[in-house]
Structures are given as C-alpha cells and as structure tokens.
Image: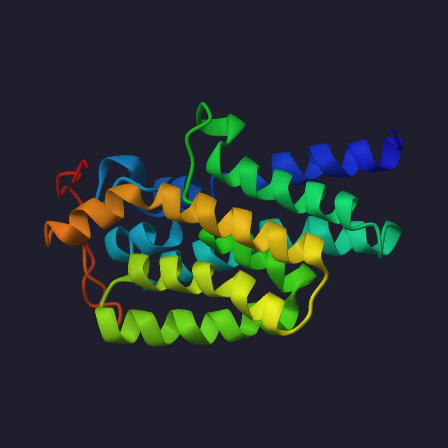
Length: 211
C-alpha cells in the first residue's frame, strides 16, 4: 500500500480523535463535559453547559478535523474515491471512537460535515440549510442533525454525485442516526435538552441525563 496514503489515514484518525469539546470545557470551566448536560462531548452540549463561544469553537474545530485531512488527500488522490472515502471515514471514526478518551467520543456530526464539505460541497451546503430549518422548527439540535444527515445522500444522488460518495453519505447518515438513539429516546419521552438560540445552557453542576 502507498506509504503516503497510510500516513494520511493515520493522520486523519489521530486528528479526528482530538476531543475538542472535552479540552475546551476543561480549559474554560475546569470540568469533564461528559458529566454534564447530555454527557456528549460535542459542540451542542459544550454550547449549553460552557457557553456560546466555547460551543462555536468546538463546532469549528470539529468540522476542520474532517475537512483538512480530506482536502489534503484530494491533493494527492483527486479522483481515487476509495482513498478519499477511507481518509474521511477514519477522521469520522476518530471523532466517534477517539483513542484519547478510551474510544468514547462524540456523535460525529460536525466532523462528518467537514468531511463532506470537502467531498460534496454543494449537497453539504444544502443539508446545512435543512439543519438550520429543522433546529428552528423543533428547538432541538439533535433533530436538525438527524434530518440534515439523512438528507445528504438524497441531495448527493439528486445532484448526480459519484455513486461511491453517495453510498458513503448514506452509511455515515445511518451511523449518525444510530449514535442518536439515546436522543430519540429522550425526544419520545420529552426529556431531550432544548436549544433556543443559545439561551438554554445547562448550569454547571447539572446532573447528566443518562439514557
């Protein structure tokens, strides 16, 4: 196998695995974000518990963790979809199963967004619009994340993107839905944490809502 591709794959996993939300919460509030709010170390929970700025930093960095390795891979393998998919998938896997937190990470939404922004920019932009509308209507980031993720393979297919990338989008969407099963249970039980324009931060010290 190409040594450069192996290096890119390892880089993608290690970069994707950087636990941004965990590090930001530790830095800003001195807390383990996994013990507060929903218990997820992603941008939405950091936004609620730590604050607006911390949430946006987490979201931006998590997206870049997916975007950068794929953009780099495209410089070397512009039309080798298997290589691009492998690098992108490892960045997502690194985020969800991070080696830095004993293989327990986030749900992969922001990092997946970064990966597909590099692979499928137009469908990803359309899905971001769906995400914003879904969050505005439902009041829940989890609902926007699930609907936006599910819409990606549809938009990619409608646009006539390469079949390999459409399949990847469908697989990642399914993975994100599986990771949101606890959120679905809380939504059905009307216990899901709400999002209302950044005014619903869980106070530091609030007990974790375990599924």
